[in-house]
Length: 178
Image (cartoon, rainbow, N blue to C red; front, side):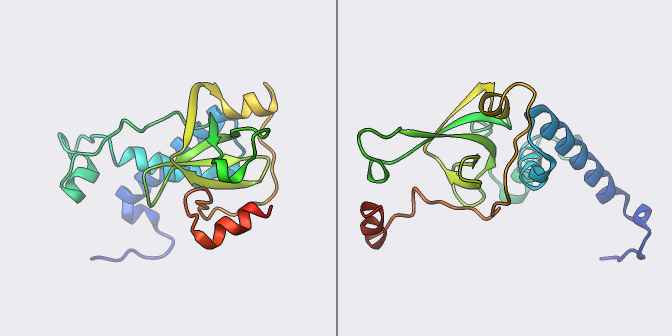
């Protein structure tokens, strides 16, 4: 491994080119979705997730993930970034008169499991779940906040919260008492 001198990014042209490409992708995704620039990290993770599953002229006919893992990746789970999402609320967390879903915005793919990362604007948090319906025909920000609005929110934790799927016996009692 060869190190580069400080303050000389031109010595590492390949990495700098990828960084430029990734940030161009982030800007386009955020602009198209209507999400604020504060979602750049979610957008970057989503961009890299997709980029690693697409062929490249240097790796063709294989993808970077295929070279690394030895398995052809699936892209069937790909959805449009920023789409309107309906997150299912399990029966244990609601009663008969409450809604069966929460409205959210697709901001990426789960890092640890099969599923999606959904931003819930009413709760100011990002959750990971597979129990979601994603309506790719509707933009989440425009559907929830109006045609010319951007998503405004308070600070939220970017760490994944898998609140609906990590229920053990001790948590059931807490949920029933809410």
